[in-house]
Length: 524
Image: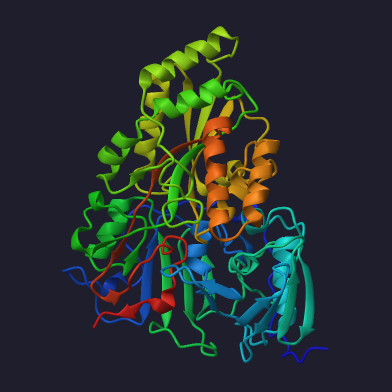
């Protein structure tokens, strides 16, 4: 029996994910509070922190928080995890759990923070922690975080007392606390059969309203257990054009803008940071021509990655040889980037055609609109280079809701032609397990195909520790590049925020995935 404060309101019934995704980004650059704007790139003092995003979040459902467009709003702002990863040091730090330990790397005991209240006024206890984990990992809700972080295995959960929880993995899992850092805690009453549109959390800000297609508003939570944020209110808007977002910063209409590049004319108000994102093409091998590995190799040879990085991104990004960047466990500096060799690409296409592969079969290059700067230009360059190699490529620019149907299993089955998805993968956790388990295993949530041998290599790497873990994941990435070739890697990215003269914020490698508003202060 738990000593609980009665819920002041029930969790709103969830809306089906598809019902949330029909909004469109607004054009123009006028935003709320714009009457406060002054010339010179700053604004009059305000208690409202104004953020402009590339796109409207598809959902604010807590168990979808690993989606960049969702996490940038809610993670550690509206909701909070049990354990939080420091993006600078990589160390795990206490949040709603104050300590954690294990004697066997299989059963972990977590001590929870006392005196924490949800935004509805109810107490946070072990029942909420257990329900959050069970809902996201063990239920049939289909949370994105389940496939991204936990895979197919369920967790056994036990409430030891009101502020102690035991979590037992199906097998030894030395990084289980790191996995748990991806779960944003919600109240026990949250539906386990439907996803919610507006979550109740414990964070420094509570969600006030979400006006579909227009804005999201939040306010500082007066009963927050931690240090109160400096700004009393927060307003999120979204504009798809980078130049528009930049203009909102330079004119004083917004305080922080995401997803910018120097070409957006942001000037000195653009702040670069090393993010954790890698752009790649994921090829589905269930249809011609991608059912022939020669074609998948031809795609890799046909794309001039170095020129793309130089011409589109000013040399700030780095041509990629694998899905994780430097600094992530498993990244190998010795793995070579596929060379650009247009003639070799043509020869492989011709060889596949001679062997009976239908190389004229359509390829659908599926790309998310406004996902990152110059994405449409990048897609057009890739389309042209693959066409020059002798392939037939259709470019499909989709909004977030449509793109998500291609991103995660089950993938569309009635597509006319093969699928090649442009993906922007961010490894926020700093360990390759969070990449390969979802993207490369046979049943991975974002894997188009796999092999028994690759599954075996991944299982061995997941169980390894220390130097053996690094070496095992390096072997996984090499095998993928040599024997599977599911991906054509493009570039490891560098992020840029627009930050007005009115505020102070130091971005880090996770700022593109979780913009912690409590860390933003007024400029001194």
